[in-house]
Image 1: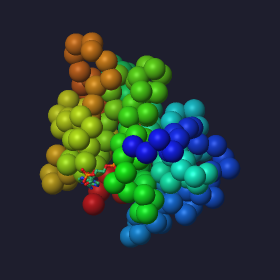
Image 2: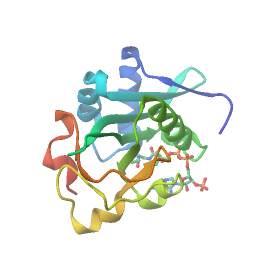
Image 3: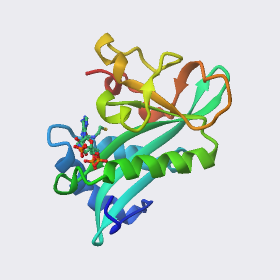
Image 4: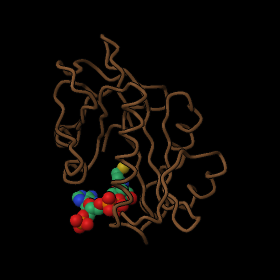
Length: 175
Ligand SMILES: CC(C)(COP(=O)(O)OP(=O)(O)OC[C@H]1O[C@@H](n2cnc3c(N)ncnc32)[C@H](O)[C@@H]1OP(=O)(O)O)[C@@H](O)C(=O)NCCC(=O)NCCS
């Protein structure tokens, strides 16, 4: 990635930039209500922005949760957005890697994602059949439900992902 891009935690003053970034990266989808609701759940959320030439050009959110019944600490990745004018420069990858590093330090055992298998596969996310999402996924989305381990401890988390209330809406888990 270009050295002129910085990755840092987001601050409330970034909200205006995010209001431009999301419609640009996701023209057919309004993800801002979800992003704003997650940012209000500060305690359980890791929010990073990529800054280039003083402008926010990328954003990633991770929501911490548990795999129950054992209560293992994990996180869910999403959403991730990079401004169209700077895509394919490694910014999305840099946001993912920075987030995984922070989450490992915060004690998360693994990170789950519901996303394009070809894209997330590049970063080591593999299909997860041990952790069930909060709501059953349609069959065609099973390959998109992936995870990456952050520690070397044996015994993968097994059970159902429990997340803060914002994610507990069936519509977010359906096509
Ligand atoms: C997906 C997205 C975050 C990638 O960000 P980015 O900064 O362009 O990604 P990177 O530069 O780190 O990686 C780009 C590489 O991934 C590939 N790639 C990008 N999107 C991909 C996809 N959906 N599937 C497979 N590969 C993809 C590119 O071909 C590129 O590879 P190349 O440079 O070898 O050709 C960005 O394109 C985006 O915001 N898209 C719209 C929103 C979206 O789909 N978000 C992700 C789901 S939450």
